[in-house]
Length: 166
Image 1 (tube, rainbow, N blue to C red):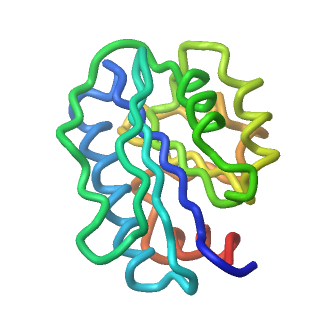
Image 2: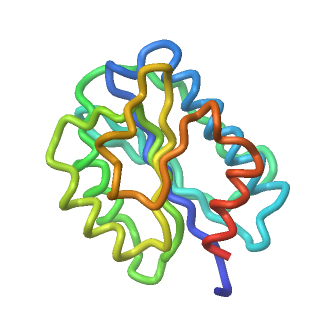
């Protein structure tokens, strides 16, 4: 595959992400960012959406060293993953095949499965990165290519996920 590698990040900032889960999310985004900068074989564009009751686009920029610093993320509201996936679908160009990472504690509260099916047709792979000690991978079983617990999401595993899009 030639050209840019599009990396899509959906960042759960719902009330259940307060404390350790939100800190794990930030660590995971930094780990992925550092892996992209150091080891990606293709230039990358990162698209980030934070979601709770309402999704908010955070960025859509070519990745260069120092990029992808997150704004202050304040947890609150419900975990409306479906709304975030639909917003992502609206913002993606049809030729933007890439990789999707969902950083969450695994507790979506809306109808998200149909929206994920629509997005899966437009990306190479979908990964769930489970944040926090009580994070559940149950909702994602059979729906994503791989789910990682943040404690197991090492630079080597992050690199393995990137290789899927190269």
